[in-house]
Amino acid sequence: MVIARNTRPVPHSPVQARSLAHGADPMPEIMEMPASDSVSEADFKTAMRQVASSVAVITARSGRARNGLTATAVCSVSVDPPTMLVCINRSATADGLIDESGAFAINFLADEQHRIARLFSTAKLSSEERFAEGRWTALATGSPVLDGAVATFDCRVVETVPSGTHHIYFGRVVGVTSLDEEALLYRDGSFRRLAAIG
Ligand SMILES: Cc1cc2nc3c(=O)[nH]c(=O)nc-3n(C[C@H](O)[C@H](O)[C@H](O)COP(=O)(O)O)c2cc1C
Image (cartoon, rainbow, N blue to C red; front, side, top):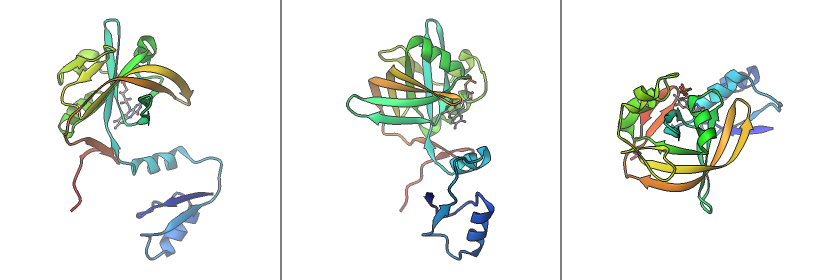
C-alpha cells in the first residue's frame, strides 16, 4: 500500500478520482492508493511535475572535450566522506565524458543563470554554444565550474550504478564553492524563483 499526503491531489486512477470528487476538504487527507507493482509512465511524470527541485548543470572534461547537461536528479549522499550522486541519461553527451574522465562537477545555478540552464538542456548543442554563456573555471578535477553558481561540487567518480535509462554516478567531493545567492528552481515544466513566506 502506498500512502501519499497531498494538499491538492491529482487523481491517478478512477478510484482516486471518485474519492477526490466526494472528499470535501482535501487539505489534510491521506490518500491510500491501490497496491500495485507498477505505475504508468504518464502517472510517474505527472507526480514528478509537482516536485520542485534545485537546478544544476553537471559538467565533465575528457582531454580537450568538455560538455554538460542541466539536471535535477542530484543528491547529497554523505558528509563523511563527502559524497554526491547524479543521475545521467546514458544518451547524454556528458555521460561518456564522465565515464572517460572519472570526474564531474555539479553547478547549482543562481536564478539569474536561467539562460545557462536552457543552453544545457537544449538537445545536442555544441560545447562552444553552451560554454559561451557565463565564466567557467576549474577546481581539482578539471571539470568546468561556473562563476556565480550558488554551490559547486567538484567530484571524482567512486561508483557507477546502471539504472534503467540512466547511470547513477557517486562522486567523492574534492572541491566546493558556495555563494549566498537565490537558487534557480524547476517545477511543472518551468524555471522559477524562490519566494520567501511571510
Ligand atoms: C529542468 C531539467 C532537469 C533535467 N534533469 C536531468 C537529469 O537529472 N538527468 C539527465 O540525464 N537529464 C536531465 N535533463 C535533460 C538534459 O538536460 C537534456 O537531455 C540535455 O540536452 C542532455 O544533454 P545533450 O543534449 O548534450 O545530450 C533535464 C532537463 C531539464 C530541463
